[in-house]
Length: 132
Length: 132
DNA sequence: TCTTTATGGGACTTTTTTAGTCCTATTTAG
DNA sequence: CTAAATAGGACTAAAAAAGTCCCATAAAGA
Image (cartoon, rainbow over all chains, first blue to last red; front, top):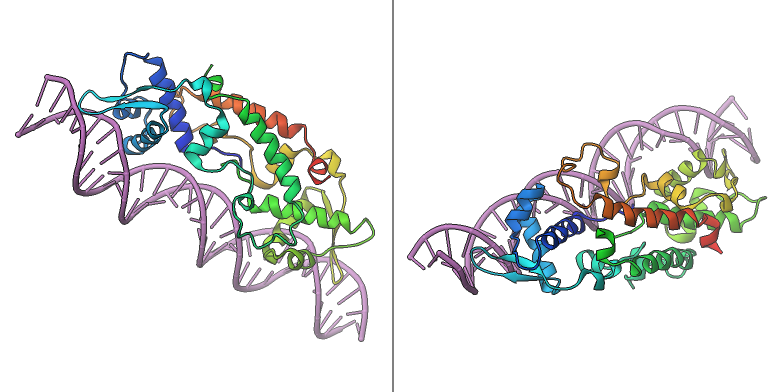
């Protein structure tokens, strides 16, 4: 439980790599995939997603790749996780209005409490924080 | 991400139900399953697990069921989650020594930080806390 | 003592989610 | 032009979660 998916893991690895190369250099998906033993196609998709979110800047063509765009200090972990994995929450039911147990459910508020606590925690941490 | 499994959800629902019935009453798996629309066999397994962990006390035979045993104040959420779902951690790699990326991995300590923060948070909350 | 209703638990199947692959465009440096 | 990169849809495979089936044991009550 409370596991992150590979997408997040790969994104963090890639961002750290790109950042370490500095602003003037470009890192390609293939280069990163090779360096860390990550499936190239899958990493490519993750990087494309980060590019769509304006976190990194894509450069097309040969010798292309990505460089940093957004300051990682400005991205909190809740947003970062949600961008890659969808809603952060302990239970589906808070995002799924079709829950068929609304009436009888006796744990909604308990779960919301844990939920809020975790979100609050992640809100206060930036992607940059976890890379320090 | 950060989702709890149904096991935990069912366990919380059941514990709250059993507790609400008071010490002198017994709640059967079937009674609880019917009341909340939970698959009975699945709930049965969850309750058996809680019984093995001495959280509830089983009573066999007809008119049997379960009653509370351990004080829910004394069970923190980390232990509770782990008992039902295995290790609480963001990534498998911290529990899986076969990880083939040890050498190149550049995110171990970042992830450990998030991990520790969440565990610390859950350590400080008891099962009773979330039911208040 | 037999029947019924409960827990205990192994083995299995189905469903859902995650991970990974395949294929085809498009862009652009050389 | 060609080669190497991003962009992205569609698909397949693998893993995890959810749920089912089946049988054993316990014990209350007729």
